Image (cartoon, rainbow, N blue to C red; front, side):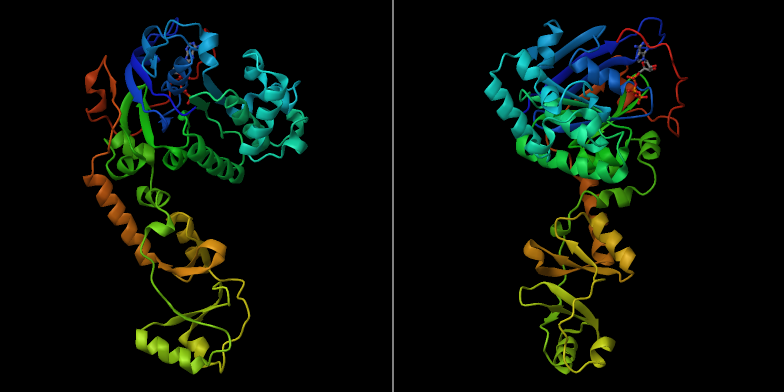
Length: 415
Ligand SMILES: Nc1ncnc2c1ncn2[C@@H]1O[C@H](COP(=O)(O)OP(=O)(O)OP(=O)(O)O)[C@@H](O)[C@H]1O
C-alpha cells in the first residue's frame, strides 16, 4: 500500500495546567506519498503535533483526517495499526527477539505464522539486515543503527500507508545517521509512504524532506515549503536564523553531480607518447589530461608539467585521484575537491567509468542557478498550512533570533 494524505484540521492541544496551547489551531495538509519534516526550537509542539496524528495524544479541538476519513473519533488502537511509528533508538522491546518485535502488529492482525515469518524476513532485507543473522537476536545484541533499522522494519510490518518518525536518527553517530538517512530515502523511493518526521536537525530536514514545516512555540507555522524554497526565500528572520549559516552550502546537498554540466577532458591511454598528449592539450586549450584504463576508468590526471617530464604515459593508478561518483551531491564533490586541493574532481559513473570533470566554478554556478530558480518558481501543489487562531502567524515578520527556549518542564503528564 502506498501513502495516504493527512489533514490536520484546526487542531489544538492544551495540556492540563499549561497557560498556552502546545498546538494552537493548526491546519496542515500532508500530501500522500511525501516526506514532511517538522522542525523548530525545543518545546514548539512538534512531537505533540506528530502524536496527535496517531492519537497517542488526543487533540483538545479539531479533526484528523486520513485519506478523506475523519479518524478523530475512531478507536485509537485500530488507528495505530494503520500508522507506523518509529522513535529514537527504535523503541524495541528488550525481552523480544528482532523477529518478535517486527511481528507485533501482524500478530495482532491475526496473520498466519508463515505469512509473518515471510514478512519479517522481507522487512529485514528491506532495511539491509541479513535475516538469517539477525532475526533471532535480541535488541541488546544490536548496534544503535541496527536497532533503528529494526524499528523501521517494525513500523512497516503491516504495510501502513503512513509512517510517523520522532527524531528517528537522533541517537546514532553521525556516520550511521547519514547511512540510515540514505536508506530511508531508498526505502521511500520503493514504498512511497506518507512520512511525517520530527527532527532537531535542519540539515536532515533538507536532505529528507519533500516539504519542511518550520514551527515556533504553539506549533505556529512560520513557513511550510520545499527545502529549496526555504533556503532561497526564508519567510523571515526567524527562519533565516533557524537555517543557520551557509544556506548556499545546504543548497549543495540538494543537487547531484549528474544534474550539472560536466566539462569534457583530453583523455589518453597508457602507452601513448606524452608529446602527442601535449599537442592535443594545445589544440583544445586544456592544461590537464585524464589517463584512462581499457575499461575507461581514471588512472592518472596529469598536468602539462608532469607530461613534459615523461616520454610515454605509464599504467600506474594514482591512489590520490579526486574521484566523485555522479550520484553524489555537489556538497560531497566540493568536499573531495577541498581535500585534494585541486579545485576540481573527476566524475565517474557506472562501473567507475569516466564521465567528465567538475570544478568549483561549476558548483558555484549551480548554487546561484538553483537559488534563482527556487526564488522565482512557485512550488507545485503546495500544501496548505496555517494557524487558524492567528492567521497572521505565517505572514507576519517575527523578531530576530530563535524564540527563547521555554523553561524545562519536568511535570509532563497526560501522554
Ligand atoms: N504531557 C504534557 N503535559 C504538559 N505539557 C506538555 C506535555 N507534553 C508536552 N508539553 C508541553 O507542550 C509544549 C510542546 O511540547 P512538544 O513535546 O510537543 O515540543 P517539541 O517541539 O516536540 O519539543 P522537543 O523538540 O524538545 O522535543 C512544551 O511546552 C511542553 O513542555
